[in-house]
Length: 412
Image 1 (cartoon, rainbow, N blue to C red):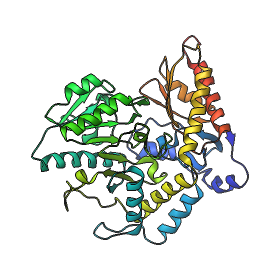
Image 2: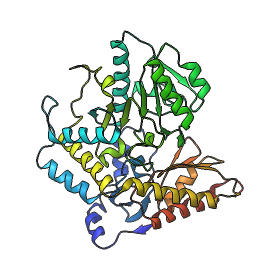
Image 3: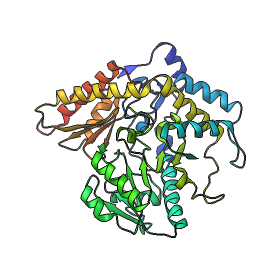
Image 4: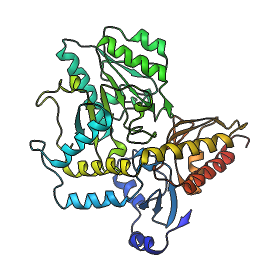
């Protein structure tokens, strides 16, 4: 781990010597998170610093949130400018940033209308409500097909679609969902009967271990939705907004969803979520049939609009594609004939390194070496850094990963 120095140190030194955040959080915050024993106080680009002046490369980016890096100057400037002008108004009134962002996302997604909310889970709840509302208007009710090993958020509705472990202690679960094995095309065909009112999936499963939708599976889902006159709902909360080398991951596959959920990187760290849909499904919502207080506020929308503009102006999609390919190629080359690493997969800078053993200790050791990472699905090291990460920083992440795997592998 490095140390803060010079001008950057001056901006954070005031926090040193204060009562540790850990002590306060352990006393006053709900005990929900298995936190690592560091307190982060400053970020710049792909790096962060803690309150003991240690420097880290952030290969997690707040779980695929800080795609433009920490404290991007254009994002900071936009927040300051909009906050001094107008932060929040009710959706009873129009506001310019919301209208401009809606137009931008319609153009980028190829869909027709957008609804704004505050998080990925809210976006998915909105997508589910839109699906059921659309079926209702057609005189139908039924089940939504969802995928095994998925993760769509922490609300009751979203955990009802996902892994069993997130449902523990929250039963009875909301009904109206039927699970299908992800990437099992025959199982999908068999499950898609006349009772089904929608098919939902992550284009790339994140919490499930960075597992891409098979192109044939996704195309089959699209065809089934066309045949049954039901929506294909894609959750791109984690894989959307340039992470995979395109603005949206489905754009790699030559298909388009009817309903799309997005969040995370959309606000560059500022909370915002969105649901986009084709006109035929968006029109199922009437005045008052859905809504939000904070969603679409001028501050969040101004930041998200600037995020989209920076992604396009700085060619961030191509940057993610090239650097992701470089990173995966290097890790694959280093893992040849190494049983500890079973697979290296992903698109762009959404990368999963599957180990032959549990990965928690690898993450802990990478932290000691100055790299923030994460383990998904038990044994997959999830690497989702800022998309502006440099080649030098990527090499340091890879070095830390390899050293940590060597140290932690059984009989290593």
